[in-house]
Image (tube, helix red, strand yellow):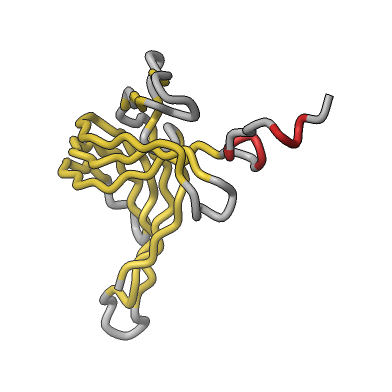
Length: 141
């Protein structure tokens, strides 16, 4: 049987990747303890995030379905600020911060007509809008 005459959906001809992106605003509190030139601290933040979930090809030039929305939630953070000081005046030249964050709000995307007409993909378990555990390094002037 020759299958070249049959319709093959476009999504079967390429790899499909799920992409979750988010933009947000966080506001919170941070408590630290000064110890000479470094300051260990812990913080808690409440944020509101706009998210977008897509099924795309590798080059992100084709999309088979999209959902977007808003979600709010708490994140937690711990870190250490290292104060690099001017030798003569004792003022901070800059601060190096090593930190870790935990928790991430969860979105429940639902995309109608994904790959086939009439098929709805629902992620009932949810997707973290960003990695639930993150580490970082910040430089402040």
